[in-house]
Image (cartoon, rainbow, N blue to C red; front, side, top):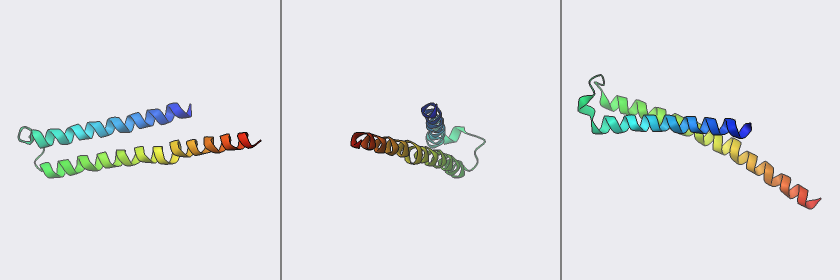
Length: 83
């Protein structure tokens, strides 16, 4: 269950990052055709903030939940070998 929840969260944040990356790519390549964005630079900055937030959350999952679990499992193996 733990792995499923962490995997789902990671997939969600990767998907968010891809969504906002594609928005930036569209703003960079076809900015003339996007009428509702009167300040393209501000729109790009907003998208970059969203990418950074999703990337930060993804890194938190990896650093504090996946690596911590790997360390716990490694310690358990060491303890079982020493018995």
